[in-house]
Amino acid sequence: MATEPIDLRALDFAETVAFARDQLGQPDYRGEQIWRWVHRAGVCDLDQMTNLSKELRAQLASRVSLGHLRVDRVQTSRDGTRKMRLLTRDHHAIESVLIPDGDKLTQCISSQVGCALDCQFCATAKLGFGRHLDAGEIADQIYRGRALVAEVEPGRRITNVVYMGMGEPLHNYDQVIRSLRILTHELGANLSYRRITVSTVGLVPGIRKLATEPMRPNLAISLNAASDRVRDRIMPINRKYTIAELIAAVRAYPLERRRRVTFEYVLLAGVNDSRADAAELARVLRGIRCKLNIIPWNPHPEAPYRRPDDRAIAAFQAEAKRHGLPTYLRTPRGDDIDAACGQLAARQDGQTLVRLGKSTR
Ligand code: SF4
Image 1 (cartoon, rainbow, N blue to C red):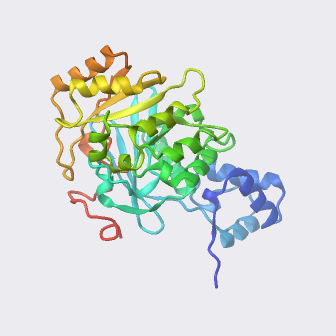
Image 2: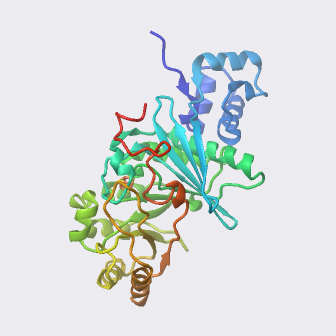
Image 3: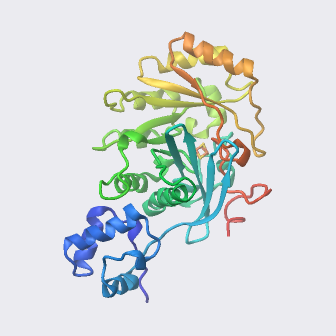
């Protein structure tokens, strides 16, 4: 039986060097060269590895794949946000979003096909769960993003990465950690942990485990309610890990100097947007070095919510600030192309959303 090719993109640096040494009989510097081609240059074709001999490239071709994602579609928003629809080798569609903001260019990446956690306001949730992405597929979103940026805005670089696209990163813990190791390696994409944020809805064991990693990304918590009564309703994960348990795990997360936890709060009219909610939120978060990002609901057809009016949004923000919570209003980015927070669902043009397993092939 033919053996599956090894996906070079999913190996970390030490594994790549070991593979070149043990499987190909090459000195360590060859492994390093291969690594640079895959993760620094982001090549999609072994023949682009021009400092490797033809024989070595042929040997590689018989043993490995580059596992890259295929860019299926790019949409550009009126605000400059770009959304890529990417296809995996097994024909699943995922999305990744590039968000320019002055000198900053943030890429929002996905960690799963669909999602299992069923947050009631989220379009991805309506897809259901497809599968976890592997570390190579997570990292490759950045390489496809870099290639797109080089094409449309030469000279510009991706400065920040957020694990905030489709899926719950801590549900796919091992592959997410592996992807962080790959993306931050100095001979590869060389991203800084300080510029990477992992956003979770609150998988408490995952947060505790992340706290013990030698290198940690920034932490963001998608909180969206100040009471269990409301959070239970809009985020089923809260029935497993209450707000008190979640906040205790966040308080124990080690923060380096000048770093703070971000709390995301999707504002839903009549659900979690009252002044009393803002005051309660400030009380719950008291003593945590943090900031609150308010995200007024970005509508999509799959959820029954409404966006609060501007007065209600301003009143909520003012009340949270009055209680000492640093609070920022996030303007929706890319909402005209369904690229804003909570809208990612890998739709085809004009398509209504169909659950995974029925529509993605
Ligand atoms: S908000 Fe995040 S965790 Fe919740 S369903 Fe959507 S993708 Fe999953």
